Length: 271
Image (cartoon, rainbow, N blue to C red; front, side):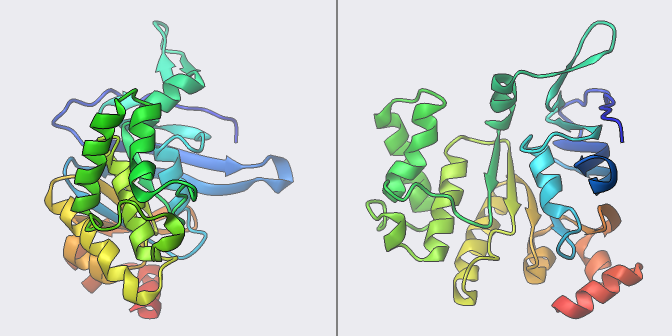
């Protein structure tokens, strides 16, 4: 597929926080090409929680990485808060790839939490959360420390601020990672299977933090296999398979009365 990014009309503040239109992602070329996303259309409303479900290899994580500009899309367009991600349009309507620094600025408005925690092992929980505001935004260390302490308290780790990652459980490390993402005051939070690397008894503490975020009105896209979380917290559930959205809608409709056989089969294996 020839790379082609088609502009979407800018959206106003009353429109969705995220609009995805006709997005394709192809890795490689020729016979080795792998078509991971196949024409994704998706709206994520402001202040809502969208949960993305699907089997391994369905394109869920790639979709998140495209929204956050960690992967360049092959075709289509993504807007976050009305801004075209990764490109600018000139007076003639021609699109040009943004400079990496401009893309980094766009990405700074989006928080992302991964399966693995990616904490700096040589820095304490407090220092991990302070790092980006100081280095990227130029916040003073005093201000960054105050904000980091507030966030670590919010995720229930006020008694672990001076602990290093190796001294924390997996659930605690993931909560530090969430606090670190929140330290940049993002407009949108992306979660890529945030509990999949955790022991079962630690999953609940991370989901509780995410539930608190949802109640606060944070716009969230969550890739997860936690059906209970989707049922209780999601405003919108999306099921992906083979790079496409197969079914989407309200949690009660999608999870309790799925219309697509592929989704029914998926739920039969995970419930």
